[in-house]
Length: 129
Image 1 (cartoon, rainbow, N blue to C red):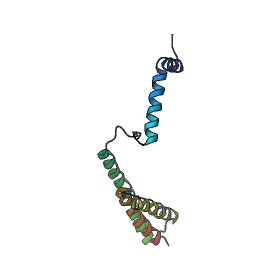
Image 2: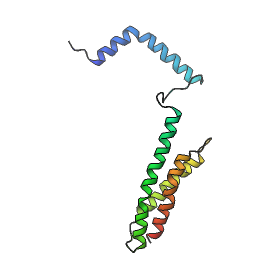
Image 3: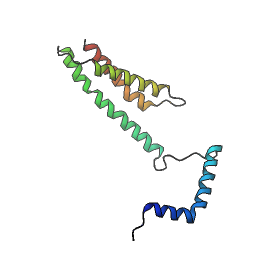
Image 4: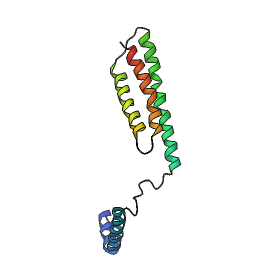
């Protein structure tokens, strides 16, 4: 006979429900008082997060290198669209400002990842005219 997950959950709560409810209530009270912070990333270390941040910094920089070809085409007379470079400059400027103005610690991977987008997007936009 197959038992549905809902039936199993109800049986579990009947057997252990009061203890689980008390434990969750005590944990919520600790969080409310500030005695304990919820652990949202138990499997990630600070070093892993920093490494991921620097890898994520390199990824958009390689994307922005594609603007070099667009700039070359614009200078040779084959004008391209101005919408994509304009959107890139605005987007990268907002993200770089966010990373630079973040308090109490600046987020340098975000700033460095978006700086080439600002420069190359602005050059591509300037040569598109």
